Image (cartoon, rainbow over all chains, first blue to last red; front, side, top):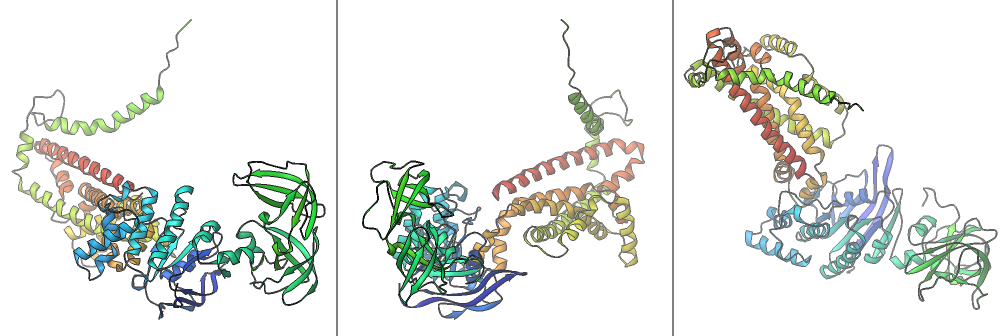
Length: 371
Length: 264
């Protein structure tokens, strides 16, 4: 990744009638970055991608790609190429002609096109399949052809619209790693739209989380996970137990809080949170809680409860623990180290937490449309 | 114990219906091979002379040429219009879309005689004399619903991102249409050409009103029916037309199905 800005989006807004699909979008991407737009369906992430691609106009704001203002520049003149959700493989052309489709409009000779196509197919591990018909391809192969067809144009930015959603789970996970490897090798900026948080986290350098047309937070995956800016983002990335808390004292770096059920503790101020109410919301990740039949030692806060549900996930076991005075039961995830399920429904257990694992999420009611 | 014989009434009804529908049509080729000028049983013997005589009648051949011209031009015009209309109907949401679609389909239900007489009045009032041109204009009008509905089914399953992908890869709007849209809907276009040609080739009422001194084949046949001696010739001609119509429609159906498969 270089320090060169490849995409600069300033104040972009898109309305469909009275519906605001994308609102005041501001985003700067570095050259060679793998960036994901993550959000639930209908949050405007695909619209944002299509605005960058030039398939969708926008009412306000400005987009610069590679230093050039895009404005009225149509999609076929932009230094971007797109991998479509449906892959959009041309059904009447074979693999070679699909991949070489865009090169026909360039000044390259027939032989140069052939070479570039072969090279691109090699890159996506479909070497030698030039003559294969489009309808003879498997889902994974179609995805690779779509990737090769876009990359062969050597775009400044590759746009990917839910590129893996049509694949089954195993193939999807293999392609995640492969696309990441390819992106790092080529050094091309990838902008991917996805609703799959794991996909976004495993592949991206940075993720932008969108809700209701607004970009709520842009950060590296580990920061999004450890310091989400509000309840929405926290609940969309990984599992999270939300707890009400009262702020009893505060300074610029830490908050003295009284957390419902767990009691008094000192937690760090989350730099991504804008407004800290006295009525604070805090979060604890399920895997950062200790669950034990005996009262455990060495935790900053403890609470006793009763196991209400047990869910076995294979790599981990999730216990749901009901604690007196709390509205929702608390989820605890325990890695499956020893192939045992230690607690069953109705057991009385202790939950332990370190104050460093308690995340400050600012205001309690942040599920509205505000930033 | 008595055995109850169940009569499959629905099957009997269906067979009776089909016989009633197609028997008269089948009589046409049967009598065209009959060695006698009177169309009545018993048959007199087998002959091909009525067919052989067809080739010697200049007015018939001229009518055939007229019909081919009208059919071809109609097919081309109706299919081009249908192609663009169908693409717009399937692809875009615009004010008046449903109204315009309804209007395009209207010729299917308006009585032909009304269309024919009003077109005749219109054409004469704007100074267009009855000719093959006016027949073509009339036929495009009645063939358009067929073309639009065939092309709509071709576009219905057409993935819009195919066009976007081509455009995204640097192709122009026209180039995208030529290199992606056209080849993919080509089977639909062929089906539409064949069907609209057949519609025009078989059409009588409009052609009768609008053809003036240059009759198309159906108008010619009608004029010949008045002469009893010519009747077997007409039957032979009718049989040939029947055969070619069925063939054309079968080919059209083949392409229509292919167009639906290829866009999956």
